Each structure stands twice: as structure tokens, then as C-alpha cells.
Image (tube, rainbow, N blue to C red; front, side, top):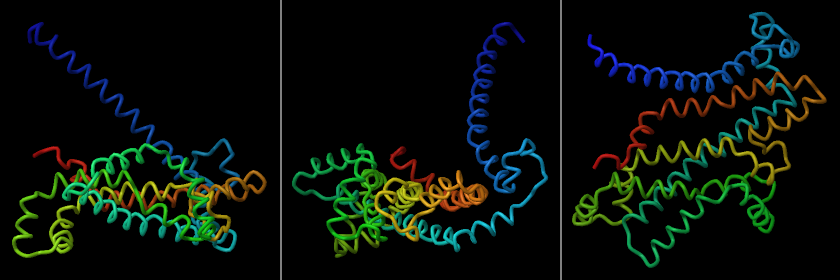
Length: 287
């Protein structure tokens, strides 16, 4: 092999080494906390603070699991159910509303359409924590504070989902198909439900996953709106237990076990819907 060939291969090998190193660091950064969480969930309270944390002794995974659902009268199961209702049902409705709005912005003409869409884009840049106090005042005026609806209704509207809905509509729903449906006598609602909505399936799944993650991890809004522990989502409930652990150390193992179970729905959703999600992310990339 000539010297020129060796010189040409060295930058490539160096580049691969750098890329592999960066990827390896990213993988370790992602997986090590998960590994620690799995190991910690299998330890009893004394082993959590001992020097032999990574040993295979003091295994009490099943005991921690029983203690988790028995603590405070089984309150964790109620929190988990609340989170599933807030996140799954809320994300499903939010995805349907967002994609429908995005479809309307894309396919229909109406006065000040672009100005209204500009407001949608501006709303994307507003942090959710800024909206918590106005939402609380509105909920207080309508008498829904400390109820299920105080947390559920605000998560149904997602400006970023509307933006994605318009992008997906542009990439997946050709105008020619809509014109053909109208020529055949289909109304606008029928055309949307029977034709457009099926084409927008990947968009629905993508918006659903984004909103599911956001609602499941939502913490500040429930903390502002709710005072009844029975209405707490998992995130807020584990926070209250973790705060109590400084006084009552028996909460430490159940908080860790509860945190481990809390990530399972998101992992399951991404695994089951991965095929649709990947196809949704490439919308409009190839025309």
C-alpha cells in the first residue's frame, strides 16, 4: 500500500474513532442512570447507603414492589392510574385536535390564516411554566381547581402539535386526492375522516408520542392545580414521597421502585409505535 493511500485512510479511521467515542459516551450517559435505577430498585433501604451497593446481595426487588403498592394505602396505584388517564387519553385527544387544526391551516383558505398561524408559532415559544399562573386563575374562576379537569383540559391544546399537523398535511395529503373525493360527492368532514385522516396516521402517532411524553412528565401544572393527593400524577406523587424521605427513610426504596415503574409506559409506547414514529419524522423529506 502506498504512502498516499495510508495518508487517505488515516483521516477516515480517525474520524470513525472520534465518532465511535462520542457515541459510546452518549450511550453510557444514557444507560448508566437507568442501570443505577434498576440496581437501586432491587436493594433494601440499608443496602442503598452501603459501600457494597453493586453487589448481588441484599436483593429485595419483590419486597420493594409490594411495599410500593402498599404504602399509604396503595396510593401509588391511584397515582399511576391518574397519570395514564392524563397522559394517554389527553395525548390521544390532543393529537386528534392538533392534526385537525394543522390540516385546516394547510388545506383551507380563510381570513388572516397566516396571522393566526403566526400566533400558533408564537405560542410554541412560550414556556409552560409561564402559563401555570394564568391557567390557575382561569380554573379558579370556573371552579375546577383541585379537580381532574384542572389538569386534563389544559393539556388538550398543543401549539407545537398544530405546527406538526400542518407539516404532515403538506407532506402526506395531496390536493389532487381531496379534489377527487369532492368530485365524487364527498363532503369536507367525510373527506377528512375517510381519506385524509388515514393518510395522516404517522402524523397522529408522532404528535401523540410527543404529547404523551410531555404530559407524563408534567409536574408544575399539577403542583399548582392540585392539593388532593388522590388526584396527583406519578411525577408529583413521587416528589411528595421523596420530600418525606428525609424524615421517614422507609420512603427511599419505594420512591426508587416507583421511578422505575414510571418510565415503563413511555418505553412501551415508543417501542410499540416506533415504526409509525420513524416514518412520521421523515414527512416531507422526499417529494
